[in-house]
Image (tube, rainbow, N blue to C red; front, side):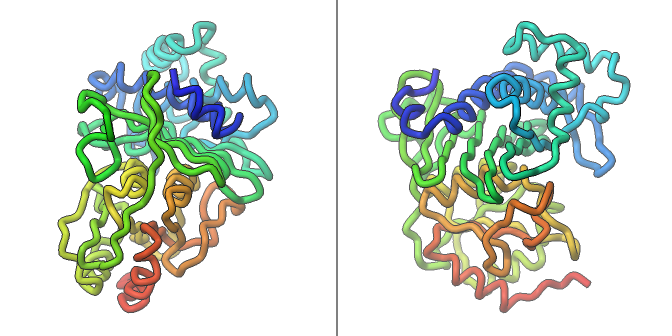
Amino acid sequence: MISAPLVSQLGRDAAFALHAVAGAARLPRAIESDVASSARTKPDASPVTLADFVVQAVIAARLARQYPDDVLVAEEDATALGVPNGDLTDRIVHMVRREEPGATRARVLAWIDRGRGSPGRRFWTLDPIDGTKGLLRGGQYAVALALIVDGSVQVGVLGCPRLPWPGRASAPPERSSRIHGGFAVAARGKGTWWTVAGDTPAVRLGVSSVADPASARVLHSVEASHSNTDRLHDVLAHLGVREPPLIMDSQAKHAVLAGGGADILLRVPTQLGSREAIWDQAAGSLIVEEAGGRVTDLTGRPLDFSTGRRLARNEGVVATNRLLHETVLAALRSCPSRLR
């Protein structure tokens, strides 16, 4: 159960997204010890596991019931399964039935493939397991779902099963340290909130008040391939950052930034012309913005989610507590890319 007052406050779309992610996020926790045996490598060299397909199927099924006319744009599709009648498909169907008792093989494959939709005026975008390598290595991962209308993110939810609390403190106010994870949820104009399953009240998240870049905490991806580390280090040296970085996988980083647990997040392209997938940024960007932060590309342009499955008009991502944003953009201009 999710706090009823929070559901009422955020509106129907956010309530649906939060409940859908909360239900689906239970499943990866149940099969964490089994995901490694199901890992496969996709053509882009990224991994995909049993958990990715299970979560995508469950959320797609709920979307089909509640919003049958809404398009889903998601990272996975059933072709990555290879032989659709194989053992992995059977395992996926078995797990999906925990949340969708009427699931059949045909229905599960159709739900997964619903994610092949084309972005339009109103659509949902999903990364079923953002940070699959984090899931596999015992690090952070997130279930990331967002609603986009007219190119603008209106709802964002991050289910973070391994993130106890996104703030600087070790545990949220009046919360037990036994809580193992939670959900960051934002609705346009209604703030960003952190909640856990149960009757405990939600906590509103807010970015930090750090204004001196030397004191800023910077979030790094674990995977070096996710960001141009040479330029990143140039920028941090230019800023005079003294604090050690926080290194973690997935859009859980956005929740930490939104909660004031860090101050700067940079995603610097590793190749000329590379563009971010929308499901890697949509939910997290709104989570940060509604907590009082700012999110742009490396040149200061707002992220434009009207250009298809990738942010075609944006280069990289800068997310900050807002106070540091212009300083970071200036540092980026002073430290040009070394890519040729």
